Length: 410
Image (cartoon, rainbow, N blue to C red):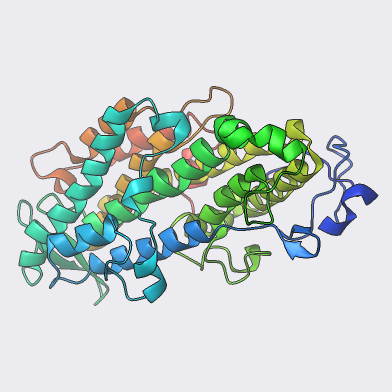
């Protein structure tokens, strides 16, 4: 499925410092220039800043590594997740010195959770439970061969990777990883920093941006910074944050990685460019005080980033289904795919449909899918291809793609 640009970009001298642009005769004239790269300056100095997002992505990477270190205890990993400034939780001194934490921003968006503390706390507790399960159930059985009802290790066929699963066949590290894509990166980007509550109302953002009132001691307006923070959750650890698409998919284990994976599927080629272009044009619109264009780009980002989550959920369910239908079932590979699928299903509750301003799937619907996936006595050991197909079809039906497209490659 090729994705067409929704807005035409035309260069105007008023924002020429932002760089070059291209045109598309099939799309409407916005009267605004998008930069060739994500470079924005004021008085010769950058106005772009998303260091907090880079920090949390790096913290997340170290937490994922901790899930693979069977000598660690629960308190150690919990401390990494809920880091306190100055605590010696990470390998990098800058991370230890930071006042940021992953847990504090998990299920913490203004739009979805400011008035929904019950769900926010429940979600945080679910991530705590992934950590506890890894330490209490998986680590003590690191050398045990896993079978239905017994946690341990399974090796992929042909001498492949070892997969460490709980008693129901779930890789808790994958559930944590892919679930965090939704609960942190997607939720903060789509439902916090790209929301009008944050963009327009925080600290008089709209009025300050109109008058170019800068944040104290900084070179950016509050609105510029909030948009950049959303950008940081996609590209904060990129090799070149001004031009990230040459390495898209290789820069972290979270949202960046899976934008790249979806881009690598010929059915969705172009989605990485569309996401990047929407970020650039939206930021240019903030500089130009064109909030209609900004909001149009926010809608594109909500739709396309949500699609990334939906596509990967279906992809992994289909890979697991194919594995179960093979002549000889490689349970290690199947459970690895389905554990990733579990995490992306979990992340669906944090997506944002711009037509409804609600997630593509409610928390209740997501819990229903997970119950179908894990609800048998032995969880993934019992799941059937028919169940995986049914969930796949239900997910694809909410989006503009088919099961065949999402499940086909990459």
